[in-house]
Image (cartoon, rainbow, N blue to C red; front, side, top):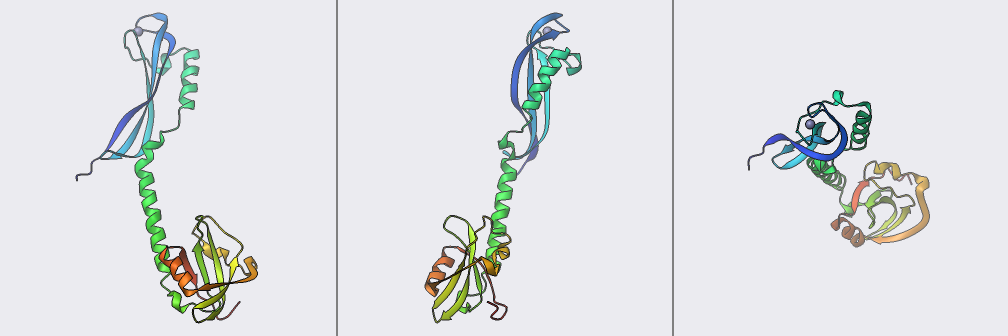
Length: 207
Ligand SMILES: [Zn+2]
């Protein structure tokens, strides 16, 4: 498929107001204000907006009217609308949002892959496991003891809503006193479901 990069213009607002047309020479004729935005696109997918612009014309004779030729009242009216309608339509960002989303998924995939290369079978006392909770938050637990496939762990009391800077969670004071039991099979299930985000190997038995 050929990808075409270009810009398009979209009429995002129009309304009429009363004003003077220099051509019709009538004081209270209907003038139409049209506000546009230009946006770039890749084939048919809008990437991001680039420019706002507008035009005014007389609805009776179709003559374009320069902003400078409007009366003070009309200028104030047009300014107020232009100010209120400054926001670009959200759909003009579709392509950029899709690119950002794909990038963040790729980064997360890379992050998870590079942090879980340490096999769960080799987990030992003092290692810290960072994981995603069922609600989409992130926390950690620390391994206190290992007896074959059975681990005694302490859970972190803190959760955060981003998978970046998970290491910040790993403060000794954050961990509960109460021990819990997890098996290697529990951990393997978590990993299969993609809940394990990373492992920090113990620097000796520091805990
Ligand atoms: Zn006119």
